[in-house]
Image (cartoon, rainbow, N blue to C red):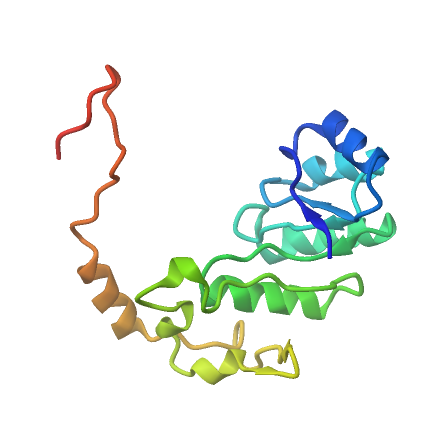
Length: 177
């Protein structure tokens, strides 16, 4: 569908070279943090799709502004969302308001969710049920989902002993916990 983030977002010159030699649409934006970051890419004209991340780029309001800017430049929208149900619900609410929304990234049932799923934290998992490859925009109060707070508490207790396996001291030795 598109080449995703072929270079670091701040490397517009390299993006120019990729677009110059490829007829495959290019997407970027997962690690852009403001509309001013996106503005540079839009003005350069080297992107076909943006993958803004609501968790990085200022939430629903700021991302709506970025998506509207993208639409003015004929740039499509494919929000980046490898996170949980709150982020996904927020993305879907944004998608519902954007004429240039093409596809919504999500992380349901993929490899790094082994042992649990992002929907485990919901009162009603069916809110994100797919029909014919399309998920219905959640309806109801707020973002249209209810979080199972007891499940969140239980899971947070389960992982209290987690430690970063590669944490190192300034001298390069492995940190003691």
